[in-house]
Image 1 (cartoon, rainbow, N blue to C red):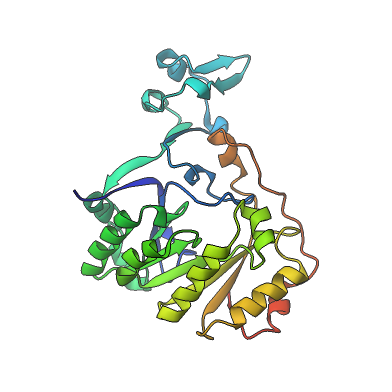
Image 2: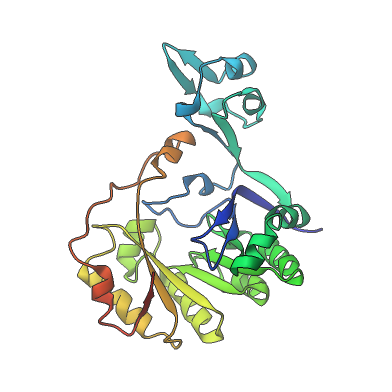
Amino acid sequence: MKPEGFFADVKPFAVHDGPGIRTTLFLKGCSLRCVWCHNPETISRKPELAFFASKCVFCGRCAAVCRRHILRNGVHAIDRNGCTVCGECVKRCPAGALRIYGEKISVEEAFRMLTADRMFYENSGGGVTISGGEPLLQPEFCAALFRRLHEAGVHTALDSCGNVPWSNFELVLPWTDLVLFDLKAADSEVHRKCTGSDNRLILENLRRLDECGVPLEIRMPLMTGWNDTEDDLRKAGELLGSLRSASVPVRLLSCHDFARSKYAAVGRPDTMPHPETPEFSAAEFLGRYPVRLIN
């Protein structure tokens, strides 16, 4: 049986998920719980109903087909405890205020969808990126899709937090042109504070990727007051400077709170901190170490 994927969304014309113009497929399910998560709709492995209140026109069509929608005194509420995510309300909504995150997709369906904008890849040196969530929680699907894309000459990039068994990487790496590796924190306790998990497995996988010579870009999301103290950056600099591939590029990512509305949309508690101005330049501090920073 051919593997199926379970995805949350697809983003065409992406320019921050690898080289060139790309299409990014966001798979459902994640093994971390980052306090600043920018894609909360990808955390759960289950389908989720999203409600964007700012788009609602209070037409009542959703409530007419599902009593879980409650419109009263200018407020549209959803009783999520009884919601089966059947999608009937989504079909009735004329304003696009409702949608479902979480659909099954075959390798061929994903291939056709992801290569619809192929001429933009070829003209820009781009391709396809699989992200999440954590895509390597669906390793068989990723491997089959990347193999199909490789056969068609499409550049592939894998965006991973690394918190999966190494065997999951081994399934996908033969057809992976670039790994975008998220390093949340080098210190284990800081990592646990930020993500709910230690980073032992993540660091093991980072060193294995470094040793096997796969093209790699390390991404460090920085949230002021959480993982950007001098001690945090010193440990990160020492770790990155110890990698065998001295030319591994490192990209610093400033966290923002643009995704805050998505927490409310899927009914998830908002854990995202409010971004603050950092007290010093992380780039200048890491410049003391043999680290190749890129913009």
